[in-house]
Length: 415
Picture (tube, rainbow, N blue to C red):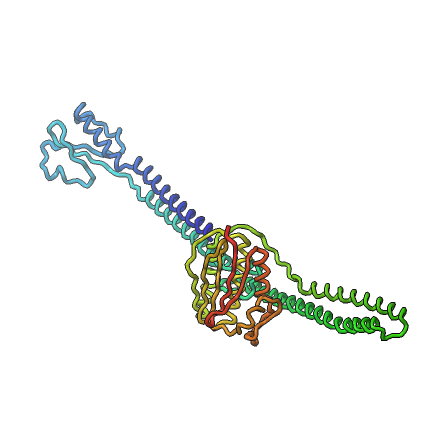
């Protein structure tokens, strides 16, 4: 949009320059060739000629604007000055001369200049109007949608796409919002499937442990001589015990696999300023929280260079703030900054925390939801993903409750 504004200004300046140049050139040409100055030049030539050669030697055919030259002589003053022609009075050699002249009619030239200016103005107005129309009806609505694909790519699917009044992009905005809803549904289905898979693995692991215990008890019974045939007892014991160990190892592998990372979270480690992350959060949430009448305050901070992934840090902060919006009382959300050794701590506080302190150790576990979740939608993965991302950035995240204020602190390293 800024580039287009610069182009618009350049076009306006160019049109003004063309208009000014054309008028100056025409008026300059007209001034250099107008009879308005020419009659004065020729009148002075007449004066010079009379001074040199006398009144009788004047040849009016040499002049294009001088029509007559008359000397006052014996005429009375009144008749000398009464004439229908334009004239000049000059005193030459002690006598007064009336030099009559005529001006060429240049009204048609000014008419052409007026028509030219009219069409130049109409053209300029049309060009500017078309460019302003394109700016307001095409580029501005599109500019408002430029962040939507970026937010969708980052997985930020909570905010609906604003429907503008532009007839050019109404269907496009509707389609993008429909895409956002479909992606959100797919994400929820995927998370639900992951949850079901993990639950299934854990259930199978638990179910296998029961016969495993029985097999191990059998093996113990055999080893204690409950069966009379010693060789048979030992053989059965060895076989059962071997199988039991295999099953136990298998169960351990299943449990281990179920507890390992199942989301593909990529992090691009780099360097960025703290102010960049703060500006992104401010731009995104100031308007949103103002609409829902939630107080939003960002505390003072000293800018510094951080080590990590800017987009992932913003994603973590967005997840934390979304939780603050969802589970808080909507009164206030505050972001504060502190420094500790070589790390910068970013704390998000929200009022109206109803989570018991006894549940704090579980808030970062996968698929875990607090007792205060109620009927609010969610997968129980938000804070779990936040912790995984922060660990990949060599940082951390932790939570605390302070006087009914939920405090989630993100720790990220400085450069």
